[in-house]
Image (cartoon, rainbow, N blue to C red; front, top):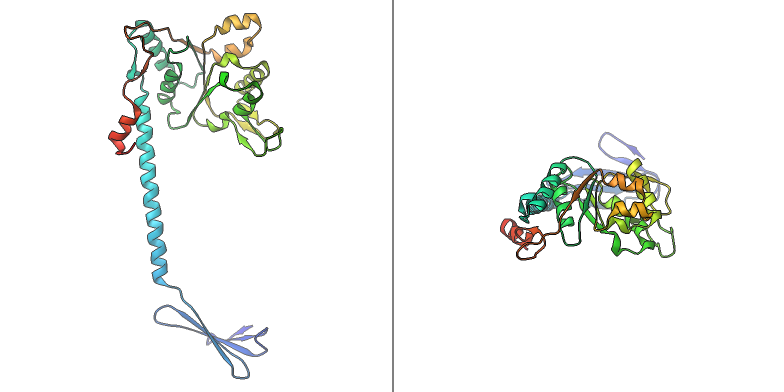
Length: 287
C-alpha cells in the first residue's frame, strides 16, 4: 500500500490491484474513509471517535475513584475504631496484679519482641494480645489469631504455613497459611502448648530464620510477622516432662506476661469497655 500527499493510498490485496483509499475528517471529529476500485465501485465507512462516549467513560472513572476514596476513608475509620477499642486503658479489670500485667504488656507493645502470655482460661489473653498489636508499630497490619488446640494435628502445619496444590490428598488448590495472612502484622498463637513435636520443630526454625516453606513447596517465604503466643499450661514443667521443646520455649518467652485470675465482685472476665459496634455506629453511621 502506498500513500500520496493527499492522504490517498493504493491498496494491493483483497480489494484488487490499484484500489485507492482516501480519508477525510468532519468538523465533528469523525473520520470517513472511501475506497475506490479501478472499475469505479466505491465503499465508504465511518469511524466515530465520540467525545460524548469519552466524557461518559471519564465520568464513570471519576465515580469509581470517588467510591474508592469513600471505602478507604471508611476502612480508616473502622481501623481507628478498632485501635481505640483495644487500648490498654479501656480494658476493664481493677485488681492490682492485673493492672501490673497490663502495664508490662503496654511497655513491650511498641517493640518487636516476641511475647508469651500465660494464665488460666478466661483471663483475657487474646484481649491483651490485641491490645499489644494495636499499640505497636504493626497496628496498620492484620491481627491473625489461631487456636492451636482447636485444629487437628494433621492440619495444624497446613493452617500455619499453608500448602501447595497437590501437597497431599485433598489439596486441590494452593492455600495461604496464617503466617502469610499475618504478613506485616501480628500472629497470635493461642494454646501454644498443644502443638505437636513436629510442628514445634518447624515453628522454631521459622522464629530463628524468619523464613518457611508451604507444605509440599520449595519456595522460601519470609515470616514478616510479630509473634505473640499464649498458654494456660505450665510450659516450664512441660519442658521438664519432655512434652515441649526447651529451645522453642525460650524463644517464645523472650518477654513473659502472666495474667492472674480475677476474683472481682462480679466474677466477670476482663473485657474492653464499649462494644465496637456502638463505636462504629457513632463514627460511621452504619453497623
